[in-house]
Length: 116
Image (cartoon, rainbow, N blue to C red; front, side, top):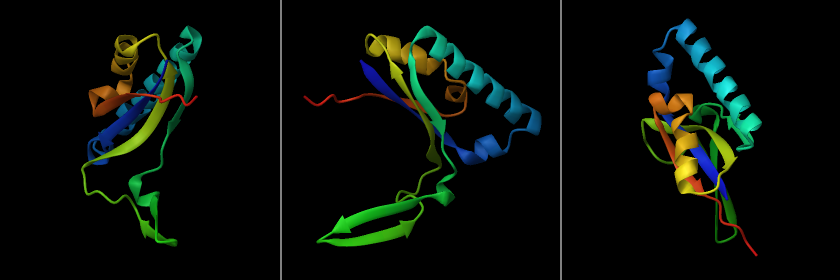
């Protein structure tokens, strides 16, 4: 089964880390992605730009509206995602627990709905 691991964290918490701590976290994250690829779990992983770079698009009654940033006011924002292959939810949870940013924020694990 495929699972989406959404990486949520407070940008201020990450921003408060030293340059060395950020570099170590980056290295740890890349190494974990590499380990997931080698184990056959990784499908794709990407970090996202900060929420200030986002726009939200809505279409209502045929009209498109675009607003800056995310709609919800929250401290934690989606910072990235990892799409994985796992035999079941328990294995997906074990994979998510190894994501380095899980120590600073939260990892939402959600099964992918397969159509057909």
